[in-house]
Image (cartoon, rainbow, N blue to C red):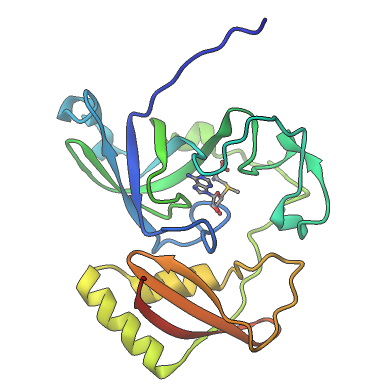
Length: 233
Ligand code: SAM
């Protein structure tokens, strides 16, 4: 029998993303996506983060806690490939994977005892974090590395705003003290819709960012219009 190991979270992320839909598929794609890693005892002591202020980015190892499954999958259908092509699980960064472990390089904005302030995250609110490691540019940047399946960041589509929606977003940005307009722009520009769906102009899509419901539609293919930004129900 295979040995098994138990791990436990060193903290949990409080994130702008309150549901999976519309979270960027990788970190760094939405620099305005911010959150806080709240460390739990005994890691909430200042000693655990001493020296981290010298580091611009960190690796987070975390659990895809809302995608855990009992039966391991050998093949997955990455959204990046349109959801209709399957690939070996180890060839992808899909959330459904053995042990449900994710990894992201994120920007470290501020360090406090018990709290790491992060940006450029791709993590759902409440994500359990297993470990934090400093990004080490000389070792982690691999010159000449390639990935023919994901050669470049996803193409962006234009995002337009209704006047009322933009005013709503600006007001809530002030209240939250967050770059909300930029967050919505950056996330929607990546077109969160599964690639195989053809959007009808009358169909309204929505996702929750912070405590707000954001609703948008596609007036034509390849164009998003934000319709409203209202308190989440
Ligand atoms: N950068 C990580 C990696 O490569 O392991 C995550 C990549 S995964 C493709 C990114 C997606 O994971 C996001 O778009 C979001 O929908 C999903 N996600 C983020 N946090 C999650 C969580 N705690 N549980 C389940 N899914 C999550």
